[in-house]
Image 1 (cartoon, rainbow, N blue to C red):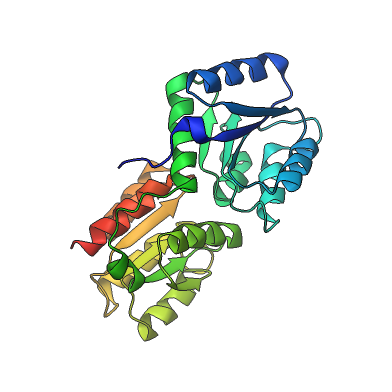
Image 2: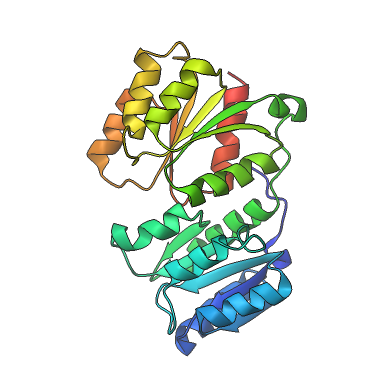
Length: 267
């Protein structure tokens, strides 16, 4: 999929307390063609800078552990402010524990780049951010405006992030559910063209919802996209057997969502 923004057009705000790591990342960014780079060592300094500039056009790259807060707290603070909730966020960390990274995944981060990383891995994260800021117009406008989406996720932040991506594509008919049980009620009453669902949810999870759709719903052929941070291969295999159309990892690239929607329109 073609990208509409070159990396030279990106403005990066790097939040990194380590001078050595900041130097390394800055050098990689310049090698990738990024021209405007700001450096802050604390989360509060980054938030103040973003608030002053409105955040528009910026991409935040942050370490997980900062002197005054965690990177998870930084992205949560950004998502709680209207003017900053759409700013792309990339986390750089050697942390692998799911319980630590889950808040970042649920917040709608563009990427999590694992340390140690190379320029190619950083470049992919940057292109995902560029794609998020400037989505390519590769879907027919007339078709997209009539598309009906059911968005199912117990995380309000995740739903808000996905809704923004969908609205930028021109999709206006979006219905939200906080879990599979509520989605079942909506599916009984409302016809949809695509279901986008999380996996881990209370009451009824994404696998159970997919099984219901495929075996009991009158809309049993509707495409189902699973967006999840689940890493257990056995559980993911069970989701595939349940009949999902595709699985996207959290954090996901905006292009993944667009591709599935585009493919569903051609079915």
